Amino acid sequence: MGNLGFQEILLIAVVVLVLFGGRKIPEFMRGLGRGVREFNDAKDNVKKELEEGIKQNDQPSTTTTSATSTTPPAVASSDYNEYLEWKKQQELSATTKSNS
Image (cartoon, rainbow, N blue to C red; front, side, top):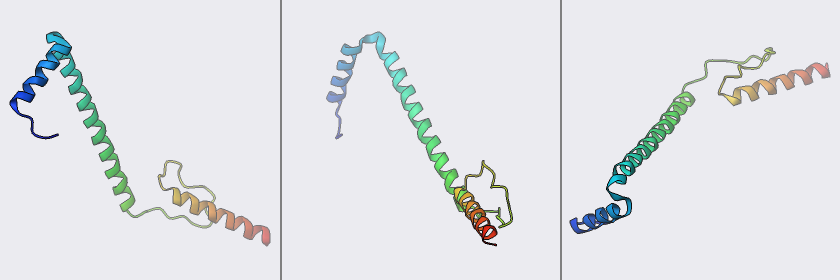
């Protein structure tokens, strides 16, 4: 973007004043401020969600599945691999029962 000198800044200010007029500049700046604030809020929320997700993945799983369990893991569980493991165990137990 380079270095902006006083003359360039003054020229930009005059162009903005001519395009928007003296009454519209405060509304324009207010809208610009809101847009920047909303962008920063959204950026912070995404950053927070990513950090929470990383923390959840780093924590060891405290739940264990047993081969005799007939109920699936809780639907609210975010660990999809746990569900897949349970489903695989159910299929194995169903095939061993049908072979017996």
